[in-house]
Length: 445
Ligand SMILES: C=C(O[C@@H]1C=C(C(=O)O)C=C[C@H]1O)C(=O)O
Image: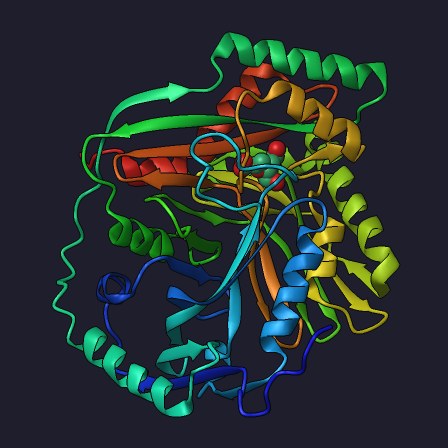
């Protein structure tokens, strides 16, 4: 039987104060590990350090288990957040497959893990906020406020200069899949699609880069954060080991605020031009290309169908082109109003994996991925994001991502395959999708 909490324990205690804005590097280095980070176009930049609470889960029930852990954590609290962006939020993510995270470099990553940072720096529109959270039974408002004072001294007194170490350079590259193996896999997938039991599958590759110098975490994350303001940027250090999963993704999985849902279908890709006119020409060609439009529409239609059981109404915008630093994608924004109050994790579970990263029908696509990919996806292409006490949240699809270790990075990228895909073109598309992370690893010239 569950005993009620002793009435003297307030549950979660959270206090925030406004501070003089530190540099990104000073805040990152001053925070205790393991560190967590999140930044989105419509959200503050949040840097978290250590954990006041960590919730992990495994298997098919991992979404429901994280939700139960969150509900328990947020059940009662004494919260003075100062500003909305600094309210207690759990940040984390899931593995792509249930039972994922077995092979290298994923060993330190649980199949699902969310943390409420113990110390958090929030760069919001209305100032920079320092927050301390404590969920232990012996916490009191006084101990949390004392800790807040100490952390303020540490961050404001941080002597880290913003020296931006250079990009590390790459000594050696190893691919999980060479061109011949890729061609064979793509041809086998296309054969299966033509035979009729598969409509689309997303196959990925991994690229291991041995670095010529230590991976500069703060500088890399700061550069990614500044360079991709239109993307969701994220990083997660697990409890054990020296790894960090990070990336800058253009793809939102779902966001929920009250009963309003926003999501995106993002699939179908072309490159960037050398000139604005060439960019425009490539974009027009993408919008008119039947292979890419088919690949995209399968995603948009499936997302609509996946949301339908939860929605009072759904509206999709027109298909358009989303231009990014190294690629352009077909994009359909989708909004919905829910038929009832729901938790964002219900929607995450319903939507993941969308055919933008899995395929159709889902079971056959996942089987093809399992049989073909010679590596573990871990958290690549899986949901990463945050949840709050009200069950609101925002999740992105963790593509354009990598796992960094002290002198090694493992990058991931995939492509959607349909009946008339071409192995060479898809190979080139993967190389373009590595670019955002590779650009941060290759030595400055
Ligand atoms: C799977 C990835 O990207 C996905 C696949 C796309 C495509 O095949 O056109 C486009 C955007 C993403 O939905 C990746 O970047 O790793």
